[in-house]
Image (cartoon, rainbow, N blue to C red):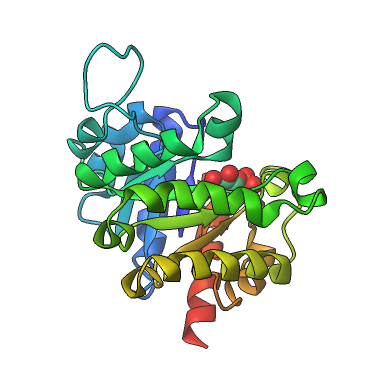
Length: 250
Ligand code: 13P
């Protein structure tokens, strides 16, 4: 269960949120993995407050470069200096607003892996693409670009998140069956890369809330969630984590 804070947070509020999430997560079963992806300036704060807790922290993007004259970019190695576990790559907001191509996202996933981070590779279609019947074509292309550049061993250590663009921050969630269909398609693609890749965790993201979490996570190929807005409130984020635990225990 991974929170994506996006460009939210201030140092004072973060402290309360991080401490509350760490405290709440400590009561969960060890099999429920919890992480928060924070804005870069707060990686040090996250490291200070979450070290020794069960909650891992992550970055929301990494550069495709390892270093050099790239003003404003952050290398995966730099994030690793702050004990980071996860690196989101290819979030739809970056694909849309920063014109990130499937190939660029693939390079970013490679850089993250080389730095010892776990890339959370986001894929998703827009409403127009869904309505045109292109969902599988779009997300297939996005995932394949990444799988093509990774070895089977590398591919086995990524996380994939399906985030339909039309469900992000809109309050519109994919129906559980609708999300499951896409996850089953993604699972097939992973399986084709190799037996060890088939078990890569598949997260769903897009307006996950405490009220819809259990039904979504109850789907066969939905292994967890990438949570935006609801991860900014410890009560909601922890309720979503508990919903995942309830599903796992059944
Ligand atoms: P919301 O949960 O706010 O819809 O955001 C989902 C998301 O984009 C997580 O990466």
